[in-house]
Length: 80
Image (cartoon, rainbow, N blue to C red; front, side):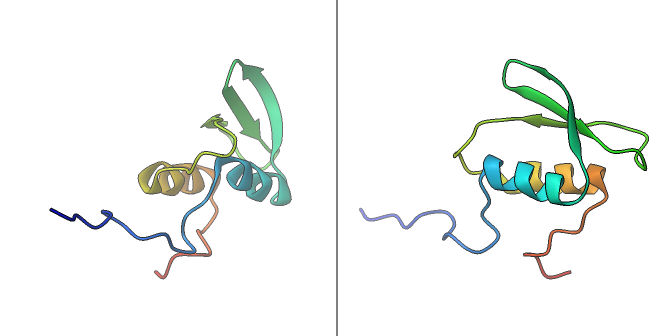
């Protein structure tokens, strides 16, 4: 039996490397790193943004939304 993929690829799909690039373009800098876990921050933000960095792997949608919410960034690929 043929089963289609649960979700089709769309513009909203993002790799971890793309997510980090987006943060850095918005003024975030790496504050500390331990293994694959990176913490990003910027002077205007009271808290750190944690990224479990996995390079070229796709970021799950919920994870991407949560990271962008904590960072105070709107996901430009999503319609609100």
